[in-house]
Amino acid sequence: MRSVTFQKCWILLFIVLLSFVKTPSILAAENHDELFISIGDALMDTKDAKWESVRDSMKQFEQEWNSIKKSDSIFAEKVDTQLTTVNSTLKHKDQQAVNQALSDLSKAVQEYDTEQNPVNNEKEKEKVKQLLPIVENMRKTVETGNFTKAKEEYKAFLFEWNSNELIVRNESVVSYGEIEKQSAFLRIAITQDPPNQQKALSALSDLKMAISNFLSGNVQKKSTDTYKLNDGLHLLSSAEKKIQDQEFNGAISDLNEFLTIWPMIEGEVRTKNNQLYNDIEMNVPMIISIISSKEIDTNKAESMTNDLIDRIGLVMENTSYSAWDAALILLREGLEALLIIATLVAFLKTTNQANKQKWVWGGVAAGVLASGIIAIIINIIFSKITAASSREYIEGITGIVAVLMMLTVGAWLHNKTNIRNWNQYLDRQMKQAIATGSLFSFSLISFLSIFREGAETIIFYAGMAPEMSMSQLLLGIVSALLLLIVIGYIIIRYSVKIPIRLFFIIATLLIYFFAFKILGVSIHALQISNVIPTNPIKSFVFIQSIGIYPTFETIIPQAILLVFIIAAAIWVKKHNRVKAM
View 1 (cartoon, one colour):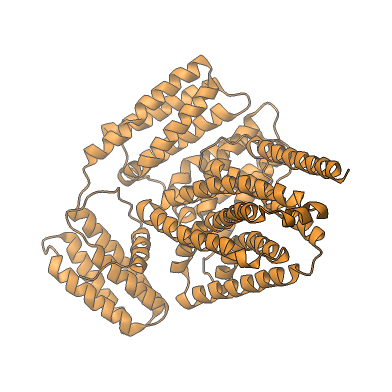
View 2: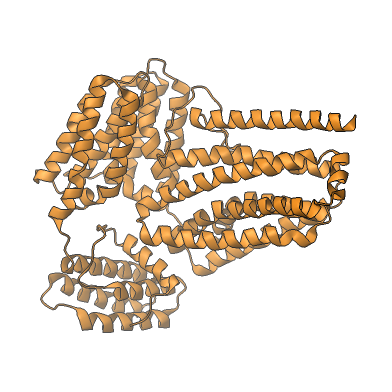
């Protein structure tokens, strides 16, 4: 059997997601990976119209399939039928028809795999049962009126639920939807201002009932209603109009209905836009909380609702990516890191220490390598659902570490804006030791700048790849890389012509600006991952491009950062004045 290479691991991940059948992680009695890999190879070659390669992959699939199939299985017959369909459509070389036939074959193989490797449902339900004690503890806490503790216990519940929700969803989408809905209602009740004890207790009672019904088998396998994403969009639009007309009870009713049907329509959003999926789950309860509070911020609620409506509308359009889309991903994620790295390299050239660039480029290389490793770990070990939150968690933590390093370097650069200080610095006998220490900081910053964005970029490309040809993907990546190289060259090449004092001022301002922005973005990423809470500030500006988010958790640290920067500037000025005397 062929070895599963790195590329094939990506293909396998894609095929499993494509099958639309999610199964908990189990130890399979039979391994059908080779079948999925052959289908994956065929799908990739179909996009590039490499028909001979597609036929070769199907021959390998057929050989493997004939050697392992159980002829008494109904699902095996279905695989045989779909395989015949694939071979038939290949004769006409119709990309769309072949792609659909391969997708149907993948689903048939997944059904066969599930039949041959059944899940121990009772053992899986024991994991879900662990939710009940957490819910009971929350009930007791809410009864005492301690909502601070209740919020912490809710985080514990959410972590446990996110770890086991697929078990419920696979057996009963209705139970899954009910638990999701009551969880959202509970969050609304304990986070609104002031918290609503009666609603919280009601949600906890219904939540316990939903979990208990699932565990006892008193469940409905499928919903009798059929909903589409457009139904959810209609409810949000209705809620927005009612918010504008200040019919808040009607808006709350529409938003609650949206939460009810969300589990049945979330799939299309989750597979196309993980960020939007997270924002919907976070912001819809927040909107309800805002319009349920004593002081209702109508503009804020309307703006948040309108944002979700616009973004869902984009998801509903047919998704197809071009080279330009691929280029924009790398440009968006890479430009910020490039500016930081180019500033550090330009500094070394300006100060006649160009031979020390290896510290910076070493950090870049390590960042690229670490990004690739983390991206592989996230995509192979974690499911698609948790990949986005893992990505945000990594971005948040590394971003905050990078900010701390930037403050150190920023203060050091700021101190050198005084020419006398700079000349004295160059004349010191210990110059090499000090420079080495600073260069280590530079190396760490360059590493974190790349690492912070790298894993996210790789994961984004993994999600785009199935929706575009490989040639378009590579063209976009190469084009973006070339443009980034040109921008970096211009910055480094012409920065040496800037007067030393002016350069230090510009470099200091750039470092501080990125520290401010990255701090806000990093904390927001941790909020998305539910690591830290989200408490919105009413009537406050929202400028994502510079990292300003209207929450207490982001604004307070940024305010402290600004105080630090101002204090550092005052100290440097006084220090230089004393030295000049």
